[in-house]
Image (cartoon, rainbow, N blue to C red; front, side, top):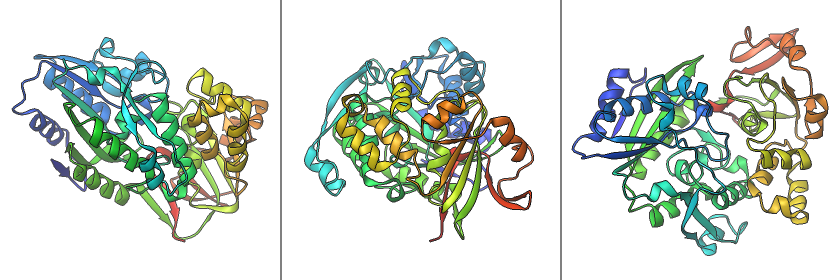
Length: 415
């Protein structure tokens, strides 16, 4: 089921499509897997609410946000994302370290083949144990297809194997992507990580009552436009969503950018773990020797959980080669390869400078992690996010490229 509209689907059209996806099913218990609040422009909050309204009178509904390594949603985030009529007590919190079961393994030979020999170890396939609960008649996996630094294009089976996955798959997939190289992955289908997910889905999810509900969206401020809705298990649906996202979420730049300012919405970005999208999504447009300035008023930590935060503070964003050395030398980093991958992703490898204007971290903390620092108030006075427009601006006679939200796009130089 594919629904596309250049000017966006109306709420009436959206509800009708979701109702059609449920037609003919006898449902007593449903598990919904939406993203968390960090995907606030995905349209998934509205879709989850509509499904809840369609189903609540006739069956039990559990909602398991696909957190991956993220912090659990607060009541305020829940209400802002899903609305007041979706009960907070329906939430089940996913714990990626402990609350999973192993379904099987992606063999080393396959991993080696898809990674061109860069990774030669098997990868365990783990998911939240509730996905294997036979009492669920339907599992709805909801989320946005958009360029992504680890898998190429986010969502589809990533929502299961990372969003609802375990530490082994999360660590291994992130490191696989880092080894292969972000520039070879972002904005593309059939990356090595995606092929690992495809293998795992084909071999280990076939018997689950799983239905994907995918979106392709853009936003103007808080107004989200759903340009495409793709419902079904077929990979062809995902591929159609990939094509649409590539059309609406990729910005091709005619030349490299010398100075880029990226704003991180305080409602969405509270850690560098999330906020480093400002780095990932712009690096393919940044000029060597350029400057990336990240306005991050609510960023007050590095990792989304305490252990990841500790490791980032300990080792810092020190570049690909140094991180690989640290992995060889330190057991705690070897046991947390998703952190190692994150450290690789969050460095420019000396190509351009990164100034983090974190509103809730000290200069010592930011510099200790390997970034330059400027107080948020000082930076916001120079580059006022309330007056800058997305795209090219002139600030004090200097050309500045401004991005109000890095999460919904990928900026790539035509070169």
